[in-house]
Image (cartoon, rainbow, N blue to C red; front, side):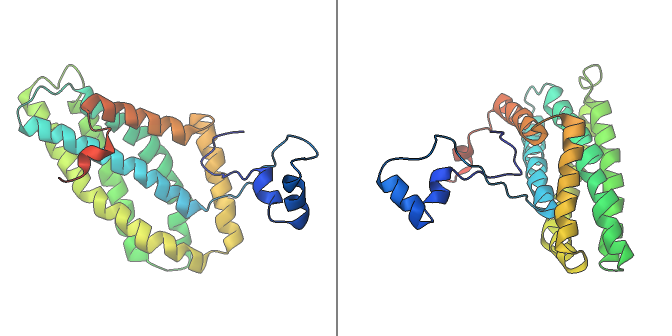
Length: 233
């Protein structure tokens, strides 16, 4: 049984309980075999992209913690910024945003819907890549020790956070829901399958889970992995 994020699994017991025959079998404590049936339900392409926005949001929290420590003049190793920026480059920009630019944005441009929004989103993708390049360059181990490099990283992270919070919120609440109004449900489902194949091609099986694990490792390094710590007293 795979731990693929695109499926949820129902056991044979749960399915059998829905029928009189199944109820009788389980009431008697017998079954034809011990195997469990698995039912898979594909999630939609928009839902897939929204989950990936969750990864981005956690990276933004890492950036914010790094910035807080820089402002407090704490000793901050360069990988606090370089590692999440690398994940932004590989998972967000070279994968997630490429899917949007290749399969989602063209649908709205083709149907002449939300074209002004799509134009801004495209511009922000390009701006985000420039900011990520700045972070990767200035947070390199041989440069981060210089005050001007740390200031460059701070400015780029602040700009990145400020842009991407409203960016992803607009996609989640405006763009993605509108996709169902211009694209048949079957095509939206097919897009989800294409996304899955691309993810496996780039990151292997369970690529999403592996990326989440990498983000979680950085959170643990910073001591912000415990969700309860964010609860106000």
